[in-house]
Length: 208
Image (cartoon, rainbow, N blue to C red):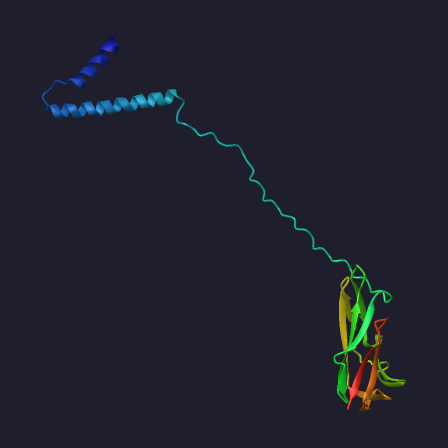
């Protein structure tokens, strides 16, 4: 009980002080006392509640690994098979139906692939034989006179056509593959066997 009486006397002295100082001094003491009391109360409550709020530490976690996109390997197109000469057709023609004597003519060979699959023709100039005749007279040919050009490949889609060309200089061919005199007026026939395919002959005329 003595301790309680002492506490009451301290509180009473602070709240209702008696002394020679001005009242303002005592009110300042009251404020300081109240601040100390409040701080003590807060400290006690904090200790009783187990201290400050400690945030729980999160356990170890692994960040998701970036997804790796697997790109598909490039698709290699299937190889195109060689054309069957017995299936592919060859139609011959010239760039005009008639030429003047000595005029150059463009010879045309149009391949057609009637099958349902694409095919290819690979040849060198020696595999191409263009021939021009007039009656029984052989006027001009590439046989034995082919130039040393690289091999070429012609791809023909299914149901499609593909053309190749050759130029005739409008002159007869002498021995040794040299140009002779200009072709005379008359009817001429173009023959050709190209890449193993024999073409349908085409007729054209030479005028004076």
